[in-house]
Length: 135
Image (cartoon, rainbow, N blue to C red):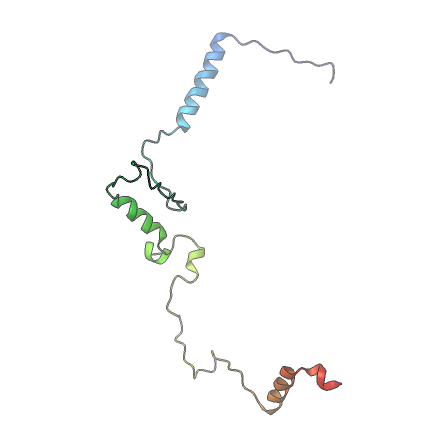
């Protein structure tokens, strides 16, 4: 293996131009020229305070209503932004109304803690500390 050295093959100008043309066309296919820019609504914006004595910072500029609407829309909760879920994980808890009406008298759904004489004694004993009474 050590004795096998590959020499560089010098391609002629036609092959080099064909290779460069294919590479250029491949790059053109994947490139996208962006001419319209906007604020990413998912990223927090850090504002910088103005300088008091600077004349260009104290100029009053008209408010950009579209920008404010975009920022306020990004700050809203998902239920107010979208009519239905956007991801699978949003489906959990999306519907706020319970599927079954919570009735307090229905013992199939409500298991209240009931204290009898022996359990009440044991709870009071635990509150006082069980180890202290054995000594």
